[in-house]
Image: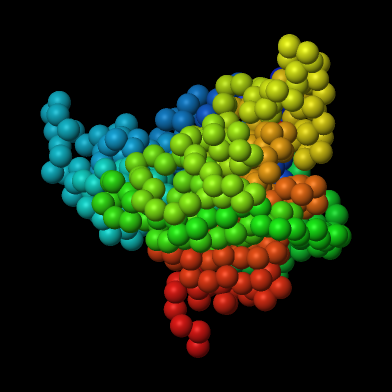
Length: 511
Ligand SMILES: Nc1ncnc2c1ncn2[C@@H]1O[C@H](COP(=O)(O)OP(=O)(O)OP(=O)(O)O)[C@@H](O)[C@H]1O
Ligand SMILES: [Mg+2]
């Protein structure tokens, strides 16, 4: 067996108005973990879609040489047959089906003309064991947490006998523990001879796990670094990604203007009908004008539930007690619409489901939550719409030629920036940001943090939910920590450390 499993030679790929890949060269050694990094829109996902036949042969230039042979994949099935499997940024599992059905979806185990259920369950158990997921294969997919869903995707790839596994930002929606598990699993798979290509914005993970790191910038290969001989550092990666040194990860906030209490939640409790239990217990928090309040906690601590219920969006659960006040006035919110009318905004962690209308343009998505701002007399000024959308696109650097571009065609990170520009445009008094930098590259993170600083300097208030502790600590004036639906502590930004927050998040005694 040759020690090179894959060579992509001079790959170019264009979309209308965008040259996504420009003569990219990419070489992967057999049995290694190869990390592919780069800024949002650099072309990482596109390169992997070329490799896996999603962008089929003929739609790109250049050659894919796999195990010494030139490949011409016309579909994802072709690449799968060759032993390549891709797990996309958006998981492709079907929530209504069981775990076992999902694993064998599209390559069912048959007995004559019927699906062989006994064998399906048996085989599913085998693959679940390989990914160390201890669940019944009959469990419906929708009951699994994202971390476990991710593992089912890997089990599915294994069941197709993948030799080269591509994972596009597999840890972006996982918490620390699930990410750690996943990385360990990747190390296991490597020992079993599977070659892995992983795209990630979490550079800390990249330096931990990569044998080789390749950096793409603006559709070109910048460098490929061997991490086995000399360890690659985060700084090296960042420098190659953004083309310069970055002195600070968090922008300085020049003047702080923290005023009176703007918004408060008192003794807020909620009951979940599906889980049959209380999911929020007497939560009380306050947010001052011009303040950034962090909400930390582990997955499942109730942070998103708190945010959604404040925002008047309570699917499947009922508020059983407590009150909200804005400027001293009690609020009663039955819907997100009312929340928005009272000046509350919520940028969701799940941009696909709640945040954006994907088939519409950037312009549309930016302005539709606040069309009043575009009124000239009684009509909406389309001119003004383009001007405003463009201004925001420039200020947070959404990478695409025009605001007329459909959001669906943007890279993951750039979609996230559209979510933010929509809310900046709506100009709420209290902005709730749920994992605002998920899937966002280091440079763009800096831009988003700067925007947050700008928002609060204008008197807006922000509640930021984030699972990245350095980010919560780096950005917040004050931090509330949640554990199992309760507030377990409050720390000032200056006193916060990863250690004391983790203790509160796991509700363990200080040692
Ligand atoms: N189907 C498409 N139609 C038009 N443009 C596209 C399409 N897919 C990707 N692009 C453009 O190609 C460029 C590269 O996008 P790609 O998704 O590969 O970036 P990425 O490196 O994966 O970024 P991210 O880290 O944000 O996921 C971007 O400018 C994107 O807008
Ligand atoms: Mg991508």
